[in-house]
Image (tube, rainbow, N blue to C red; front, side, top):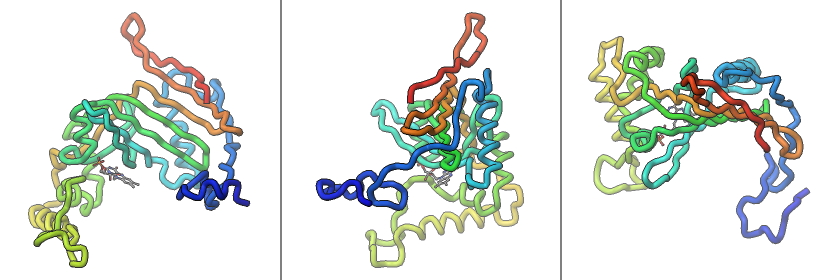
Length: 252
Ligand SMILES: Cc1cc2nc3c(=O)[nH]c(=O)nc-3n(C[C@H](O)[C@H](O)[C@H](O)COP(=O)(O)O)c2cc1C
C-alpha cells in the first residue's frame, strides 16, 4: 500500500523502499555489535575479520567494492566514485587507478585526505575509512599490474581517464557513428602496436596503487528502528610518540 501519495506528486522519487515506489524502509535485524566483538587494538585486524566474513558469505558478491571520496582545495568540492580495494596491509588500504588525468588525481594533488566506504548490504554492515593517501612505489604497482589481464594493462596505458573524448571529425554529431569512442579505440590500437610482442608490459608512470593510511575507521552494524551499533577507532599519538588506537561507541 502506498504510504505517501497526492501531496508528493511533484517529487519524482519520495521514500522509495526497494521495489516499491513509496514505502517503509526495511528494518536492520541481522546482527548486533558490541565492544567485545571487536579487535581491541587494531582496526586493520578488525577490517580483515569483517572482510573475510563478507568474502565467505555467498550473499556479498564483491566485498572489495567501495566508494572513494576525495576533495579538491581550495574549493572544497568533493567527488566520489566506486573503486575496488586491492590490498590491505598493516599500513592501510590500497586501491589502483590513474593518477595522471583522473579527477581523483587532481583532487589528491591539492589535498591528500581521502575516504573509503564499504557497504555489505546482506550483512547490514558499513565500514568507513578516513586517512591520508600516498602513492605506492613503481615496484609495488608493477607487482599488481602484472596480475592484470593483458587487455586491462593495455587499457591502463590507453585511457586518459576522465578526459573528454571528442568525435574524430567535425562537430559532435549525435546521429553519426562516432560519439568520441573512436578516439579511445585509436589510443588502444596505438598501445597494442607499441607493446606488440612484449610480454612484460611496464606499469605506466601515471598509473598505480594508492594507499589510504587510516586515521579513523568506523564499523557499523544495522539495528532495528535505526538505532544502529557504531564503533570508531581513532589513531592517537601517546606521549612516547607510539601510535595507538582509541575505540569509542558512537550514537547512531
Ligand atoms: C564496480 C566498479 C569498480 C571500479 N573500480 C575502479 C578501480 O579499481 N579503479 C579505478 O580507477 N576506477 C574504477 N572504477 C571506475 C571509477 O568509478 C571512475 O569512473 C574512474 O576511476 C574515474 O574517476 P575520477 O576521474 O572521478 O577519479 C570502477 C567502477 C565501478 C562501477
